[in-house]
Image 1 (cartoon, rainbow, N blue to C red):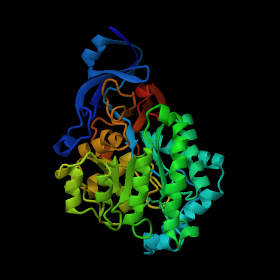
Image 2 (cartoon, rainbow, N blue to C red):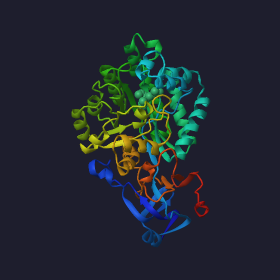
Image 3 (tube, rainbow, N blue to C red):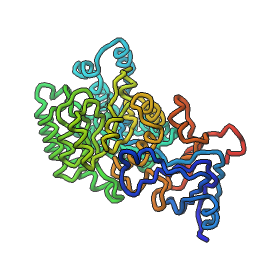
Image 4 (cartoon, helix red, strand yellow):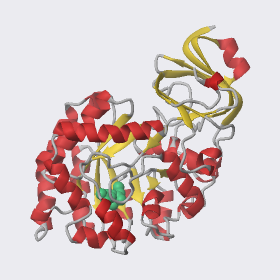
Length: 435
Ligand code: NIG
Ligand code: FE
């Protein structure tokens, strides 16, 4: 008999999303690894045992027992693409878009990302920490236990470095584990509008080396959390050659590679990033059939962000169905940001992916958990309920996991456990479950 700190027992469905050490591809995405009447034992923040309740009861004696009868237990969500460090809002732009103005046109006229840059440059580190913490609190309540977070609203060396420090402070003081991404190449700042190549020089010659120096001093580095560099390869942002220079410079320093590609325009960014062994390529609305094949034959994960299309009121979405059928590893994110996706909820992203991208609830759940963990380089640590991984676990108030994507606009997540600790609780309707 082993000792455990906590056993969650008798789950109606224990949904493991177990993946045998790699992202799920093709038909594997339809298997969420359900154990009916399952239990999971947690020790020292780690998963010690997973199995049928009668087997776990024989193997583990726990100090705390949590009854999950008629409940669904899943891995915590991994939100693999977010931009939650910013000041200000984009409410005026929301109305402009409703009236028909185009997102890239707003950006080109000094609005959009650039308007958030203005507010973010004016904010102090403390203000950014407090405002961004509230966004993390919302994400946690919706079940996110790990999140990738990008810079990219500073676009000058000082503010970009401040954003990195905000990510570091929030990782230290908030339950959600963060993965930092440097996105100095998010937009061309107004002071470089007429000479974008000089901004690319600044990114390659000063910003990336400084950011890497910072990383080496952080807990992220000592803890083996990767540090990524990203670029918005898009019309009115960074063209193919500029993106190539930035990603090559980042790779030479040691960064993992991510790229915003094919969101509105295909500039060849997918091929470029896959060729650089990117950990993920993100958005993929305009990806070509040939590039889908390249993605399928690579180790790169394709991250889709259907919240953006939903937010734009669009009926066109990245063809995730085709990508899965072609054998690509697909992950799902909220892309939480003030402009294109003000959405803290991975279940909402799943709900949209099922309806508009024709993913099954099983595929959406794997994409928002285990595949998303691989998309941020943490597939060995989190994203599924498997022995040895972090005890990042949700208890949901439903008896069939498909309800997570079926319901929208609500929140079925009742208990969030991060590294073995209960970090968020909402009341169950029936009092017997309010442990
Ligand atoms: O992923 N596409 C570029 N970046 C974000 C949007 C950021 C913003 O509009 O503030 C995205 O959609
Ligand atoms: Fe993004």
